[in-house]
Amino acid sequence: MSLFSRVLSELIKTRLPQVELFINYPHEVQHDLFNELVRVASNTEWGKKYDYSRIKTPEDFKQRVPLNSYDDLRPYIELMRQGQPNILWPSKIRWFSKSSGTTSEKSKFIPVSHEALHNCHYKAGKDMLAVYCSENPHTKLFSGKTLGMTGTHNYFSEPQAATYFGDISAILLQHLPFWAQLMRVPERNIALMSEWEEKLGRMADAVISENMVSISGVPSWMLLLLKQILEKTKLSNIAELWPNLELFVHGGVNFEPYQEQFSKILPAGIFYLDAYNASEGFFAFQATRNKNDMLLLLNHGIFYEFIPIDQIEDSQPEVLQLHQVVPGQLYALVISTNAGLWRYVIGDTVKFTSVNPYYIRIAGRTKHFINAVGEELMVENADAAIAYASKVTRSVVAEYTASPVYFGDKNNAAHQWLVEFEQPPSDLKQFIQELDKKLMDANSDYEAKRYHDLILRSPIVQPVPKNTFYNWMKLRGKLGGQNKVPRLANNRKYVDEILTMLAAQ
Figure 1 (cartoon, one colour):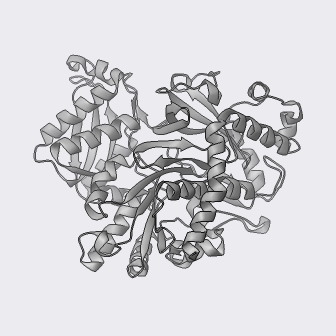
Figure 2 (figure 1 turned 135 degrees about the horizontal axis):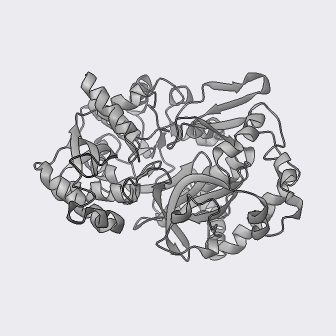
Figure 3 (figure 1 turned 180 degrees about the horizontal axis):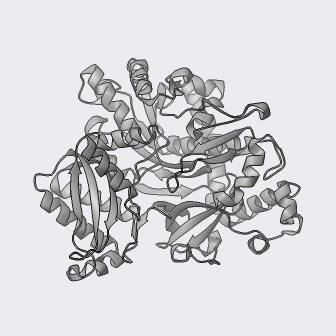
């Protein structure tokens, strides 16, 4: 048996039974995990404050421990960054994932414990590969190299305390075992470079001659890299360079708006696998080729609760456990983790498409929406509408963002969309009509506000020059795989910034 076959066989043999366990016994697995998290943290400063030793059930937990934002946990996290152990989690935490936050300008420093690293992120990665290999028994995933897009950790948090921070992808790369390092490219000193534009060029040069079998990263930044590689090699499709490329693991943003662009430059038979992996944990991954939903991971160090989206602004919202969720409903995600994030409202919204087993789709951010006149437009609606309008008009959208236009003396409200086209539609008016139509189909609140243009008039779509969003992100210091173009905002901050930038050029 070849080394490849042995690795593949061992991975499937050890991990698939664990996946089947939480699929078949989801509530029991979550309950056992809850008990373990509370027990382990009972003697921490946080555990003593909320008397974890007397918490016996999730109901006790809900009664004793409040819901928390990052600002609520910040004082405790700052103590941990100073090197103090036993604050939110018993072990001393040396690494913190720096997140720019998609709903705030302030940086967040998410604790990454040893347990979170190995029993959440890496464990989930192994399970994802095991499921993929089981679904694709003839895979050659271990016969070549993996190209990974990572951030950087060239920062020191508290040098005297020996604590550090960086992008979660960089932290994961830093701690990869030796055998895993051998399977990936580029080498670490290039992958962790902080100067993003130089890094893209160095990465392209380093990987061109490799036998690439898989790639992973945020779609927007991976697209930039692949285009640069094609430009350097004078090729039209990556298949000409890497004929064995079979898998693209992506995450961070909805892939649908990027699907058309990748289909033009990647091999026709490549498998696109969606992963929901954030600074706070690895939550879900796509388990089958023909099912875009993601399997919720239930024994990976995270206890889940859910707030119905219509109660997210309430002072005392109803908080549901896993067995109480309903398919088709939107929920804000609440997590308690093996790195000490307790009843943490992460800011993401999910929709369950199945509860046997538990499959989800990411709907967007709790604060990334437009609700200027009660339309409650979510990122999920916007992405679907952009993809639909692009398909009908045979256009390709590279990036976009949208904001409200408020009521004026002569006009009612509208949504203004700044759209960077890779391939513009021949008829922009048709694109706008199809966008509007799909938004009404997907969102009844939007449809009601659009009735006879009484409240909302037709969308205002303004094409912007190529590289507009790249230049804007660069201007904001937001280049890199951990940063995403904000799709929707309930104010005009982003749109006005971009328009001001364009006016100055």
